[in-house]
Length: 115
Image 1 (tube, helix red, strand yellow):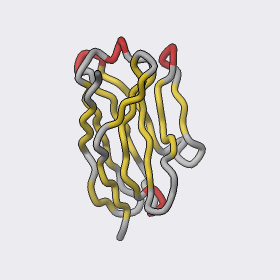
Image 2 (cartoon, one colour):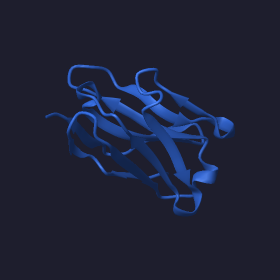
Image 3 (cartoon, helix red, strand yellow):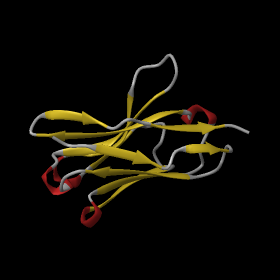
Image 4 (cartoon, helix red, strand yellow):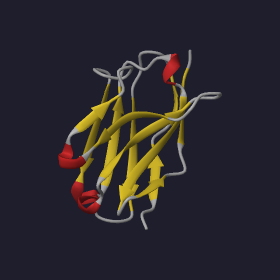
């Protein structure tokens, strides 16, 4: 199994920044894919950014040039740096990992962008 623990959410003004962290319970070297999804009220969960096989990255069009996914293999942690935040970025952000073809989710962290 893989346990994922997110942190770093909160309330921020439009144009501000936040960094989310996702700590995994096992080496992320062994995890096939890892990334971030979000779900806003009344909407479906959507991909935000992810590492795919071969350490390639994939971003939603709505966050390109604003968000950056990164990883620290020594800490088994994946980060999401979010800059130039907009009110439409408000959502619960979930860390996701695929290991041995099973998908795992964190508990989610709330990000609210509001003045």
